[in-house]
Image (cartoon, rainbow, N blue to C red; front, side, top):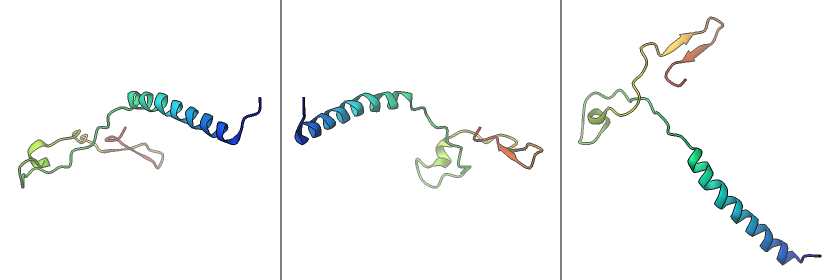
Length: 78
């Protein structure tokens, strides 16, 4: 069976739509949350700023670790 250019275009669009409808929800389910570091703001300058909420992950006591091989590890982002 030989398909015309218009039939191929419609088939390609349908396949693309199906792929998007299947992959986008799967990608959204697989997406995790991101833990952002605290900004370090301790004074509140207006209601609702970070000085009030102190949102985010606390910085580790030792931010960087020397690996002894001329590299360092960032302990906040591991």
